Amino acid sequence: MRYCNYDVENEGEIDILAVVGPTATGKTKLAISLAKSLEGEVVSADSIQIYKDLNVGTAKPTEEELGGANYHLVNFVDPRSNSSFSVASYVTLAKEIIVKIKKIERYPILCGGTGLYIDSLLNNINFFENTSDLNIRRKLKAFLDIRGKDYIYAALTKIDPETASKFHKNNAKRTLRALEFFAVTGYRISDQNALSRREKLFNPIYVGLKYKSKEDHIKKINSRVDKMFKNGLVEEVRRALDENYSKIAMSAIGYKEVVPYIKGEKSLPETIERVKISTRQYAKRQMTWFKRNKEIKWFNVDDYQNFEDLVSDVESYVKKEKNKCKIKVEPTVS
RNA sequence: GGCGCCAUAGCCAAGUGGUAAGGCAUGGGUCUGCAACACCCUGAGCCCCAGUUCAAAUCUGGGUGGCGCCU
Image (tube, rainbow, N blue to C red; front, side):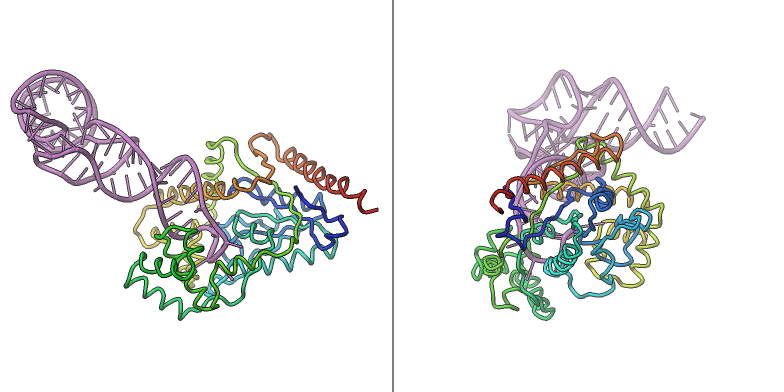
């Protein structure tokens, strides 16, 4: 059951629409349309579109596509910088912008496919600041290299069994991060988790976009990837390589697969296929993530002949949901 | 037409007498701290037939299919 911001008790709560779903389903396009018809502004929830200069491979909206709509949290991190961006930074920034959007009485529309960012933001998770330290990280990494995954996992199990139990012992990356967090802050991640739940801040309406037909989704993904190559993905990656983009930026789909091609280790057709496969796998992981959220109202994009019909269906769904709040609460307000 | 080589899961592939490695893909999943990340789980009885043998994907013969070379 959703609370409502018309309730005087919850004055601070912010109505927000979240457009979620796997990649290549038209989330961006839908969000922009809704921003226009619902007098809103879009806030991106995408861990890669935050980077400047990663354009071809990331399917960011172009000026034309935006058609004047405001689209936040895109293109603001320099991919050349190694300063670590994470959920914590994202949540801080997104919250700031959303509050601003609310102040000017426009409707915030969150749009993106990074489930971790979306959930952390909308559940108003509280993160610690300054929780990483490159030196400590390096030392822990050395430990991993010398003693192995099992050893560091055992170490984590000793100091923070709760966090350790959340992932498999082979997941060295998560193990290292948890150890680093402890070494830097003196807190266990599980402590932080316990402290992180704050009062409710958002009233989200979740709209999910997906394909009913897997084949159609694959077709869409493939043609998007083909288009990226036509639009100069290889050139963009070459530049990324020359300018030494950060490891995280280079781990983006479309970038990591093209690097071996530029180095002459893979053929072009092979590379294109690889990017398509990665994208499909990504879409699948996204779906796995979003499936857990039972509040999402799913729309099959392949149920619609034309985009306008989808937009108007989503629109009426959103309006209906907003009204539910009013009706439910109004009597208690008076 | 002749000679040679090959045939193992959707693909690549190891195994050459003792009961089918591995990788990729696929499907399912985990995840509030690098998340377009990282990680977990997931399959065949070996082209067909006949034979040798206690035992055959492995040896023999035949067939079928593919590749190469020769006339």
